[in-house]
Each structure stands twice: as structure tokens, then as C-alpha cells.
Length: 147
Ligand SMILES: CC(C)(COP(=O)(O)OP(=O)(O)OC[C@H]1O[C@@H](n2cnc3c(N)ncnc32)[C@H](O)[C@@H]1OP(=O)(O)O)[C@@H](O)C(=O)NCCC(=O)NCCS
Image 1 (cartoon, rainbow, N blue to C red):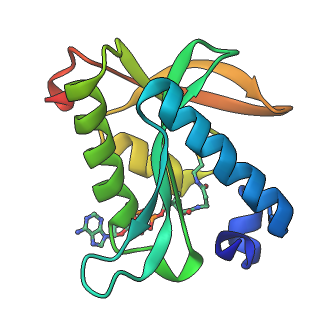
Image 2 (tube, rainbow, N blue to C red):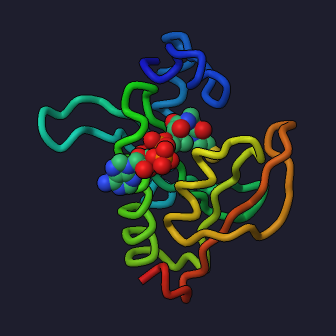
């Protein structure tokens, strides 16, 4: 719920009310128990302040696993998404038989595209996610950037 409070965040992240947030948490718990991975809170190393959400999400409709990042507006500009994304990529390839990871990004979302590029992801194809056109970025397990 804390993630949907700034207009810059709600362009991408839906502002959830309490029941919907609970549903999302239940979904996340199901994903963790079914696949062994899912979404996580991103916390500041010192102080444990809640910064955002990241992790790995399996998309049944694409048959692909995505690495994701969303930060609270006041946490942008410090490299937290890059740090969390890199940790998720390393953890994902080390622990699961994932041939590649994706990031589905709206073409105008330059900040997210820069995070993907810093992690070594490159454009794979254009697609549509929940009605929005996206560029699907991808990183192969065998890519040097994945090591
Ligand atoms: C996408 C999003 C997470 C990117 O946030 P971000 O702060 O730009 O990304 P990072 O946390 O990796 O920070 C990178 C920025 O911090 C700066 N930075 C400072 N210290 C840094 C460090 N140690 N390492 C890397 N970058 C650092 C970088 O220069 C960069 O700034 P710049 O792009 O202006 O050059 C954020 O814009 C967001 O939450 N958007 C809404 C949700 C969203 O779009 N999610 C993605 C959906 S596909």
C-alpha cells in the first residue's frame, strides 16, 4: 500500500486498498510455495526502512520468469533497484533452472530501462502486458553479465 502513494509510482504500480493488498500478499505466498521464488520487500541495509519491492515472478501466460523492481519515489536515484535486481538475477540463476530472465518495460519508462541495461539485459521482443505495449528485455543464463 505504501508504494501507491506518489503519482510517479502510480503510473506503473496500482494503488491498492487494504483487501487488495492482502490478496496480493496471498498470491505472493502461493508463488513462493509453488516455485520457490517470488516477490520480496526491499529494505534499507541500515535502519530497515521499506524502500520498495523486487524479486522474481513467473508469468504463466508467457512461460517466462521476470526480474522486477519498484521503489518508493523517495528512494529513487541511489542505485537500490540496480543492487536489488542484480542480487535477484544472481540468486535466480544460482538456484533455479531458468534459461533466461526477462524484464517487461513500457517503452517510455527510461529509468527502468536504465536499470535493465545496467544489469546486462537487452531487448528481446515487443509484447503486450495487461493491455500495455512493453519491450521485453532479457538476460540469458549463459551471458557473461549473468555471472
Ligand atoms: C524503475 C525504478 C525502480 C528505477 O529507480 P532508479 O532510482 O532510477 O534506479 P536505481 O535504484 O537503480 O538507481 C539508479 C540511479 O541512481 C544513481 N546511483 C547513485 N548511486 C548509485 C549506485 N551506487 N549504483 C547505481 N546507481 C546509483 C544512478 O546514477 C541512477 O541515476 P540516473 O539514472 O539518474 O543516472 C523507479 O523509477 C520506479 O520505482 N519506478 C516506478 C515503478 C517501475 O516503473 N518499475 C519498473 C516496472 S518495469
